[in-house]
Image (cartoon, rainbow, N blue to C red; front, side):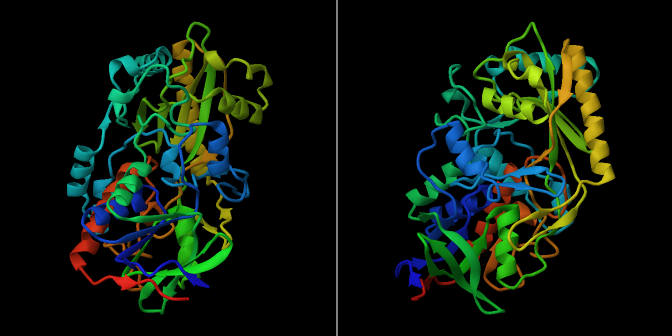
Length: 442
């Protein structure tokens, strides 16, 4: 067993999605020495289907199936799933979190002021998106422009396939931006480093054990922040003695509803989730959801609508994503054992009917729905159960900062909230100002 160096670290951050990247960046910018351990690869963002499938669609790793064959996708790469998300910025659930002693009001203001968050400029709305928004409003839905994490001044109309395969043009903000900032301020990033457990004793963490290049290695620090995502973090916690992690979680099931619009053509520069409606009382959200040709083909073939395989340019698509009931458990190997409840299926059905109404109002024909997917797994290390209001576990020096800590399902993209939580945790850790620890020898 090897140690990685004799450098000093104030904190080890496990995972580089929005939560972990924010903690690393905030601490590094304040002069703290940070080690980031990321299981996935780094390197250039190429924006290709090949890169996407290698980092977000590997069965048993980044693509997990429930017993009902619901596919749950997660990005395993520097920046996590934010590399492939649609860049939509939903506000943090401030009232819900306050019930658990977490006030993110200040951090939410900082996040909004610091990042490029705004609805799209008018010239970035395409005819397909505008048609769906107009039709939704026509039938009485509160369909609005959505905030996007985008540097819109960098956008050019010829940029294709935005959102799905990663953005090589730097228009879309992702957690890689914060990882790069952390490294620029002295943080060390190791890719291909899969953390297996936290080391120390039952009272205090002193570092982590991880595998890299086929070798088992250890690193030590004054603080350990687990930010490996809603699936990865509870598995590490279990291997570290917190066996109760990984139960009763949410994963935001979704479908897409499609129809043919013969008088509107999709453009190459469609930006998904530009507009939509949040039906809070009904428990679901709806947005436009353009996707690249290959993804259209896969989604359509999945439900055997073979006659629509070659209708990509004229396919209008609406995503319906629900707030699912808490339930299920993770296996120790990362299996997703969760079934949809009757209430979950009822929300999906209601969302489908509403989406069909929008498509019909737009003039669409041949309306069908795709299979069920899931995104944003969370609630596997909840505030109030596994971590306290400062995101600390019962083991001293051990913290969690990702979607796993969200205590309730709320059915919306979590990126904005995770950034705010990361800012709050970093401030807490810096304020404690304990001395750095040395990397442990093997």
